[in-house]
Amino acid sequence: MNTRRKFILTSAMAASGLSLSAFSPFSYSKDKEEPLKVGLIGCGSRGQGLASLMRNLPMISLVACCDPIKEHLDKGLAYADKGAKGFSDYRELLEKGNVDAVIIATPLYLHFPMAMDAIDAGKHIYVEKTITYSIEEAEKLAQRVNGSSTILQVGHQYRYYALYHKVKEIIDKGWCGQVTQFECQYHSNQDWRKPVKDPAMERHINWRMYKEYSGGLMTELCAHQIDIVNWFVGTSPQKVTGMGSLDYWKDGRENFDHVRATYYYPEGIMSSVSSVLTNAYKGYSMNILGTEGTVEILRDKAFIYAEPKYLELGTVDGVSGATVKNGSGDKGEPIPFGKNDGKDLDPTSYALIDFVGCVREGRQPFCDVNKGKDTAVAVHLGNKAMEEEKFQYWSKS
Image 1 (cartoon, rainbow, N blue to C red):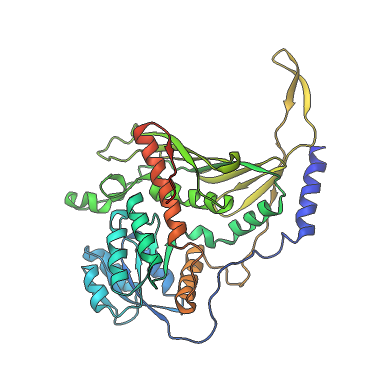
Image 2: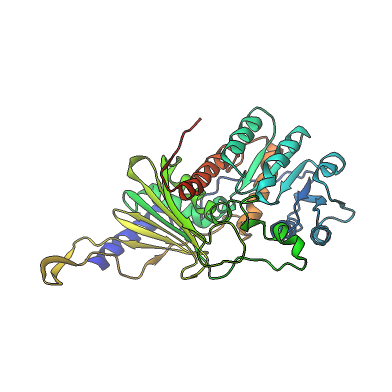
């Protein structure tokens, strides 16, 4: 019966058209226009990655870079347009960089002041996740953007990955039945440390490990999946509890080396989120549990498992009538997905393309300041729940 159940579910997917190219809520005007002149603030590893992508996107012109570390600045400029200007102070870039927009890829604690100054300078903004260092900053930034003509997009790039749009479609079509649980993990088996040539630069290079600069694993890793769950559920969590501590990597860091949080959403939906630095089994994954089926999302693929139609009962540990087998168990069916533009770009490239489209067309991004704020609130409440060891409740303003 389990095999038949799987067949029915898979056939329903095919009949509904879910094997076709993924729905896309973002676009870019194909009219020939001048490229958007962009300044990159922060040329560390993420900034360099963004710069390398922009050089292949004709609608973007990277004309200025900023980083106080000369080695980073030089690497950023190596990807920029010929004649691009370099700055050590972002305020100079805002004043003299001749840019239409800025991309903020700096340590978390700098996102808020840089974004506020960019708004004052009349620039549009693409800011990496998490949007701000604190809940208060997220609320102030949202209020400021909502009262302006600024386009602000948050770098939750998984929202621009066709795989997640396909899964969202499957959930909305009801092929998993009623979804009640999400299980999310972002695990690795490493110290998460970057090499530092000069000990005086430790906190500048490994800022993710220190509370003064970052919220650690929650803000830098778990935020991705928290944002996806918010999107899939269609709202924000009502409360969160969690535990975290610093037990393994005793090397002077301050932020936890493992975290686990459980979020409670309306209608009884719960989402568990974890990140550990001591085990990499199924490193990045999400399981979406419904009454009729389960979706498993890995880094670049996903599978659907049908729930069995009938339970198999027997004797287990001397208990007659116990459930012998009540899980899906069978091999999952791959979920086909594709990019409907035929270019097969990475999610960040699609996010940057949409940012340009939003600026040119005056529309709001798929992940705008309000969605970025909601994810930030959930992330920071998770950290607070661990630090205070008690439930934290969402108080939506």
